[in-house]
Amino acid sequence: MVDTGKIDEKKQMQEQLKQVQSNPVKTGSEAEAPKDQTKKEDSKQGEVQTTKSSEASKEQVKEQSEQKKELKVLNQRVTSAPLQDSYKISRSHRARMAISLLREFVAKQAKTNINMVRIAPAISELINVRGSRNPPKKLKIVIKKLEDQSVLVESGLPQKKKVVREKPAVAKKKPVEKKPVEKTVAKPVKSVAPTSTEKQASKVKK
Image 1 (cartoon, rainbow, N blue to C red):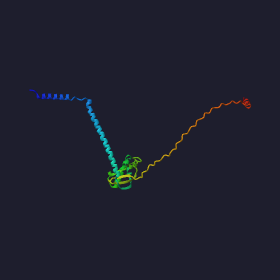
Image 2 (image 1 turned 90 degrees about the vertical axis):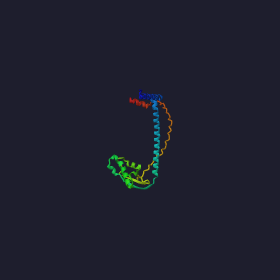
Image 3 (image 1 turned 45 degrees about the vertical axis):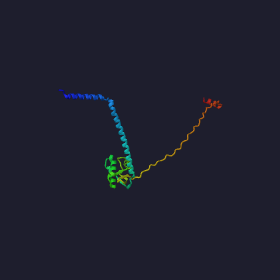
């Protein structure tokens, strides 16, 4: 009796050999080439997506800023916010504590949530004028309630206008014309014969 299992194995081996001959094995460079191409294509697609996302984010920021500028002010008042409790904490965290105290004070005065309070960058500059370790103990602010129920906090101090001092016009100095120097020729000195009195004086000295 002939084993059918062995015959099937031989047929499978022959089919595999035919497939290998029909599809030769690619070398390392040929096999890696399509992978490199796919990587380059993926990187290009990623760059395009990032540029698109960055442009979209910039447009969104511009739209939000324009909307904030267009909002009308419903209510406005000037107060002074106490920030002296910020000195109860260690020096390195006083500025952060002052900003959090300012948020709590404004939310309590405007009767809104702390998350609806927006602080202008000018106030953070005023708090950090003397450094983060020495914030002011009191600050004059303006609380503005907008249409979207948000609260904007601005500095109540008058902004100092930068005075541009014009430099005085300096008169240009005229170039000095150098006069030609005349060369003086030394004249020969004539020898003068000694007089009789000079001769007598010389004799006396001797």
